[in-house]
Image 1 (cartoon, rainbow, N blue to C red):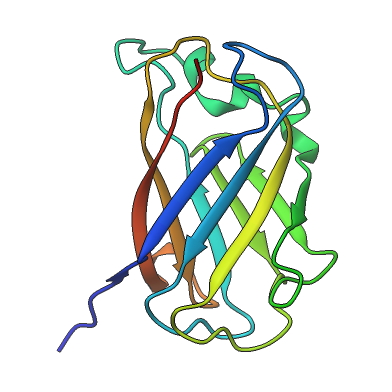
Image 2 (tube, helix red, strand yellow):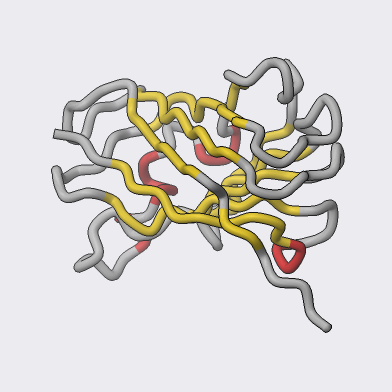
Length: 155
């Protein structure tokens, strides 16, 4: 028997600015879990091409992070997220991962929210769809607990 991943009951991704191409915006990511997440679990956000018609890395999130090698994330859900945790960005796979982030076991139905700091907004008003958000056990992406897609729009 093989376990199947669940679905996050909600995913909301918002920018602090609605200006297209704005520098130094902050993205707030808020999810609600459907299944419990262990204390040593992780969160991951997989970013697609900003512009689906573009076929180059310049349109991936990498080019929108002000400092991709030292990305900064801060908690909003201080009851469940540590005040300081590890936030890394894999520039090859375009995946942002939060690890060592939970203060305790995360019950099903818990809202988790964090901010990705100093990001450039998309360069178009076209919604960025297919932003995938995962809760993960303490192994690899194959250990996905819950998953859902989110959308980011700016005007």
